Length: 401
Image (cartoon, rainbow, N blue to C red; front, side, top):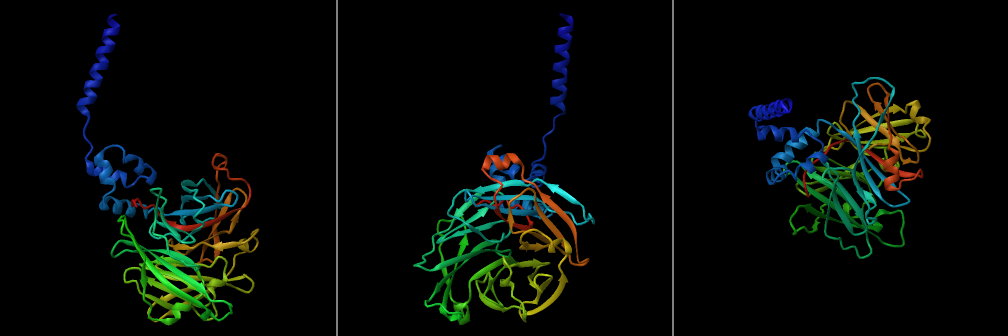
């Protein structure tokens, strides 16, 4: 009995001592910790209290989280399962190019989001962490980090076709969607004047007053460009291919559209899928020569003067012998001089990507991205072919739609 009383007394003493030693963690420190956590954890912590909920949704917190996230770039993977029509958004840690070796590493991707609505079949290149989903007259902005979708007003087509690209203006901190509506006048000939196009823009905002505004174009050629292909947002401007040797540039802030002539003897739209990319903050494009034995990288050195600089590289042996087709990842060449190659389709595990170093002219790393069996079983993903796109240099943006 005495031993029991002594034990209880000791426990009470320990509790009192622990209580007296407990200190309150400064809220500023809590915020600092939260900005370093994955978006999935931050979403959950909104339910801790009203203060945490409101704080996590403030612009200051969103900006701090984004700054931290940009130091940890990720590979964003968009997977279309043909049997079910579902789209899965996955991500994996970006490769660290300080590891200078050719050994393979295996990475298990994180499941960020599933879009089961069969309405959306096309996704544009990410812009500051957000995506644009498109089909027919329906356009939706998607944030994988918050798992949110925001549907924009439907576009009136009247039998015309539509494509759209998402852009971000860092000056005004605004997202806008550029919509290109195209009508082909029959009978169709190769002359592009048989194509009529108009341009609409919508500002992405939580306000219910979202609407499409028509953009007046000064260059009449813009009204007869080719089909929209590719596309990327760089430093507040959307770029996309519009027929052979033509690139359209849309300034997100001023909403000004202009044509840029592609380098002579290049055809970015000839690659499948077509590839424009961000080369250290400048527009870049890739095409292939001599039956894909040589790769050409063209960089827009001066946008105002439309001056390009091109370099050619022998395609690495590892890529020449890949089974099936391969593509260059759209996105950022953000880490030194690395470019990511990956297969266009995926029907087996793992899904492999290759890192190419321009300075060395060789593959320096192969990363195998392995989706575990549980994920396949839960979501009904069979061993049949999936379409896969990979975007390097992406990051999580906790901005709520």
